Structure formats: C-alpha cells, structure tokens
Length: 396
Ligand code: GLY
Image (cartoon, rainbow, N blue to C red):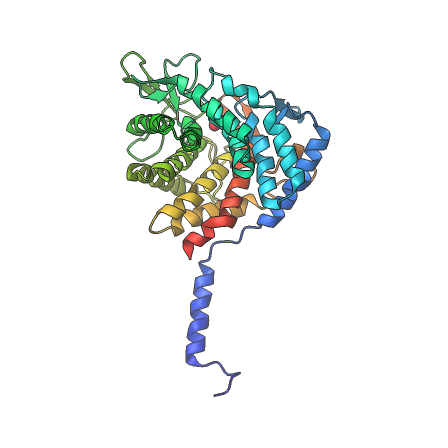
C-alpha cells in the first residue's frame, strides 16, 4: 500500500474528524485573560492601595467607584484576587487577596443585609479553600450564624431587604447567599445551616418561576401568614418581564443547590432556567444578553455582561450533572468566546482596570448602565477556572 495515497477509510476518517471539529465548542483564551487580569489588577492596586476601599464600578464622570465593606459587592475584588492566586500560584496574589479579605471581617456581625454570602463567602470562603486558615473558617461560621437570624420560619425564607415598598421580600439573588450556609454545615458539622438553606430554596422554588420558566425578581411575602403577597421586580423592566441577571442567579443558584443536596427538583429548576436563558440569548448574534429579556428598546437596549458571566459559570457546572451536557457547555463557551473579544474585554490600562465592559447594574434608576462591574469580572474568572479545570472533562 502506498503510504502517501489516502485510502477510502482514511478519507472517511478525515471527513468525520472535519465534521466533529466543525461542531466543536470554541477554545477560550484563558491564559490571555489571566495575563490581562494580572496587568489590570496590579495597576489597580498601585493606584488604589487602600485595602479597605473596594472597587465596584465606574462612576458617571468616568472615575473609579470604591465602596466600604458594607456594600453588597465588597467581597468580589478580594475574590478576584483569590482567583488570580489560584490561576498563577503566585504568593504575590495570595498576599494581596488576604489583605483585601481581612478588611471585610467586621461584616460577619452585620444583621441588616442578606448579602453576607456575596461579601464573605467570596472572600473568606474562597480564602479558606486555598489556605485552610482557622481564622477564615471562624469568619464563615460567624457570618452564617448572623445570616440565619434573618430567617422567618412562617415564611420559610431569609428576608432580603428591609426597605419599602416591600413587606418581606425574597429576591432571586438571595439563592447565592445560601452557598455559605452549606459551607458552614460542612465546617462545623452542624446540619441546621444546610437545613435552613434547603427550606429557603423550597419556598423560593414554589413561587419563583412563571409557566415559561422565566423568573420573577422579587417575591414579597406576608410575614405573619407566610402567604405570597406579590411577585414583582425591582431591577428589571417590569413585574412581568425577565431581568437577565435574575435569570442567571437562578441558573447558578439551583445548580449550586443541586451540588449540595442532589435533590432532583433543584436540577430540574436549574435546567429549566437555563433553557429559558439559552432560548433568549440565541436570538442575539453574540449571545450576550440584553439587561432584561423584555426590554422595550431591543436591539438598542444595553447589554449586561454580568448576566452572561454568572450564567456561563452556572452553565459550566450544570453541564457536569446532566446526561446531555453539550447544550449547556456550548451556551457557556459561546458567551465566553464573545466576552473574550475586544468588544467586551478591556484593553490593558483602560476601563478603570476592570476586565469587562458593558455591564448593567440597575437600569430602572440608571445606575451603572454600560459600565464595568466587579462582579462581572468575578464570575468571568470563576467561569474560566471551571472551564479550565473541569467543564471540558464533562464532555469526554
Ligand atoms: N444582588 C444585586 C444585583 O444582582 O444587582
């Protein structure tokens, strides 16, 4: 046989390989984004060295918006630095992450917010995973003990906000704060934290989804009877619209709940939320969602890259738990691929040293519209970590 002349079998194999690669998910340039993050965050730390002031976004005048530890976003920058420590293994990033983390400690006793998971699990919780520091463990446990004080057994849920016009609001974002409670049960051996998280999730699951599996942002309960008063929005376009980041929190939240409980109802909820999100984003060429799927000015409505990164990270985890992972893996990598282009990814030295452009914080009050957001970057780095470390394996 002439080794240089292709046989029929070889031609068939080449054709098969060609069609397989045509369907292959895009390769995401993880190393390039990590290198960009190192450049941006090193510059940010040089310009804003006070480790008790936490980068959040860009103000309307173009300058950096820094917050105190009390802000719900304060834990994300420390989390981003922990991700850089993971990706690079460098002690430099560990030390920077630890410095930012430690200035958040006082929040472990704050009772007027449900966001203790965002603030302390993404900082101390992540730090504990990497360092096993007993001090970090103590903060996660104390923060969890504080958070459960907002639980009302009649409603069966943790209260989200304390302001009007709501009576006892439970928002979809609150699912994210439950992750810390599962960690607290693991770290302490006390199952009551996880039990309470499941009770909250079961209450949420009863009312969160419309028939088409889109989500309401806010469920407002009567705390005396536990009855649902109203399902409504706060950051979305309308009570009956679907706020894109809220849908992403639901994908991520129910997937995380399935990881901790293996309750198939949570997996179904995560898949249905994901299917709705994918159906909506498939209408957009680059798959990056508008801030609300029912925004009246689509296609001119602002995008929200934070909804894309939260969803991408959740979808990569979801792809581990389902029989046919390609749909979720494909949707996540399609979004990540767009996010890694110059349309969305900042050039070094620009964008106030954040990674992503074009997020939307709170459109109804025109706050942080078409701006960078520290939590968009956080879930980008987490999604890249998941992509690099396990998601591709789910497809083999
Ligand atoms: N947790 C607030 C937000 O998603 O904007």
